[in-house]
Length: 361
Image 1 (tube, helix red, strand yellow):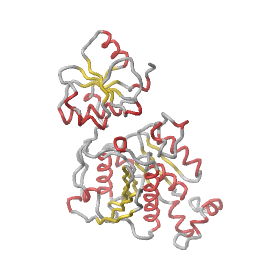
Image 2 (image 1 turned 45 degrees about the horizontal axis):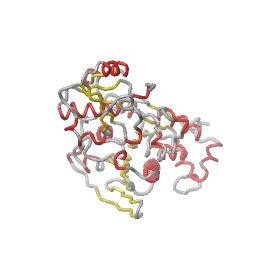
Image 3 (image 1 turned 90 degrees about the vertical axis):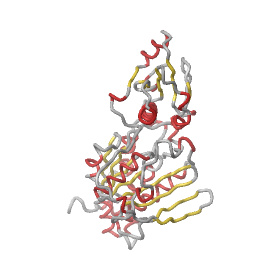
Image 4 (image 1 turned 60 degrees about the vertical axis):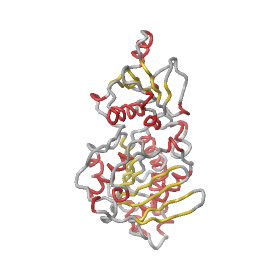
C-alpha cells in the first residue's frame, strides 16, 4: 500500500468526514496530501491550527517569532500557564502533534520578512494570515500574488471580526481593499482597544473552514467577499470586493516594519551600563513602553508610554539628551525606536539590550 494512503487508524479517525458525500475517502486523502502555512500562532492562529490538525491536513507550517505571554491566555487557547515565556511556534508544534501524530508540522521561530518569505512559501500551497500587523499582512499579500497562492485572511478587534480569501484564482487581493499600507499607529491594535476572547476562535474557525473548502473544492469561496461578524448583535454581513488592476504586484516593496531593524541602525545599552550611567547622574530619560498591565516596579524613574501611544506623545520625548527605551523583551522598544528614527528623525534613542526579562531586580 502506498505509504501516503489513509491508514486503518486514519479511516477511523476521520470517519465523520468520510461519511460526508462531499468529502469521502478521496476528499480526506486530499486533506492529507495538502500543505498549509499558518502565519502567526496567536489569537487567530491557535484555532486555525487546531482545526486544521484535527481535520488531517497532512503538512502544516507555523511561523511566529513571539513568546507566550500571560496576557495571551485569555484567547490563545492552545497555550497554558506552563508555556509562559516559551516560543509560540515550538509549543504549538508540540501540542498539535499530541493532538494528531499522523500529520507533519514544521515550525519557524522567526519573523517573516522579504528575505525568507519565498523560501518558506515554496513548501506550501495555501497561506493563512493570522498575523497582527500591517507590514506583515502586506508582505504576505504581495508574496501570495507573486507566487500565485490563495491567502485566507482574518482580522479581529473588540467584538468584531472579518474573514476573506485573497488572490483566489486571480481574485481580489488586500490591495484591492486598501491599496497602501497604513502607518504603524494609524489603526489601533488589540492591545490598545482590546478584544473579547471568543472572537479569535470564531474568526479562526471561519478561516479553517475556508482552507478545507479550497482543498476539497466545496461551496462558495469567500473570494471577492468579506464576511464581517459582530458578536454583540450576531449580525453577519457580506461586503463585495472588486478586483483592482493596481493590485497586480510583480515585486516586493518597502513594508515599514518597525519590528525589524539592522544592528547598525539601533544603539543598545545593557542594564548594568544603564545603572552605571544613572549613578553617575548622566542626563537620561527612560521610557517604558510596556502595556499598563505588564508594568512592574523599577529602581529608577521612567516615563510610562505604552507602545501604542508613542505617536500621540512625540512632544514628551527629548531630542537633546539620551533616551533609553525599555520593555520586557526589546521587541516593543525596538519598534518604538524604529518608528521615531524613521518617521520623526530622532538620533538620540537607545534600546535596553535584551529587555527586562533577563534582569533580576
